[in-house]
Length: 212
Image 1 (cartoon, rainbow, N blue to C red):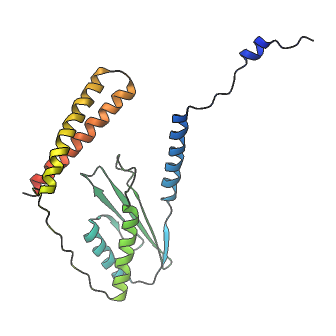
Image 2 (image 1 turned 120 degrees about the horizontal axis):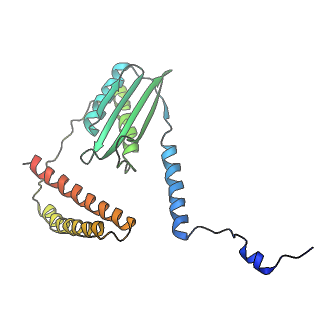
Image 3 (image 1 turned 180 degrees about the vertical axis):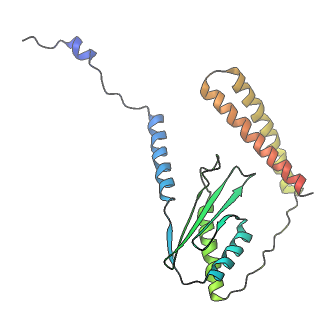
């Protein structure tokens, strides 16, 4: 029986580990998946309320947070909240069953940029529950006083002086990276830079026009 030579041992496939950057991305992906999965669960609220009280709380919350009501019946309520020219937002669902309320707010799956809610999921839930408790307690609705912000204040002008040239720089760099064709990764980065810059410029100019 012949022994195994060193050459054979050297040619044996060896298990390779992922590069650090891939392991880091994989870990971030797992954390993101866990976060998104947890947000699918409903919060159960045991509270005694009437249908008229529920609808009044819905009205107050919709006025405050600018909910767009999609469905509203005796068993289920659904609404959406849009943010930043409807690129992202949240989907709110409330189910009424056995005298309890099941409420949930998640990043709207219909919006391609809805990756995180920036705290709005929690705000949607808490604001509705606050209004429902106020209605049950007989607290009158406090009218919302919106302060009209001057789009040509010193603060806004300074922000635009800095942001507009940066956006133009991003567009130029993005076009260069897109047409240079160094690698697919650079081309994708170029598209992202152009997209972000154009979105900001469009949103800001639209805001100026609508507030004239």
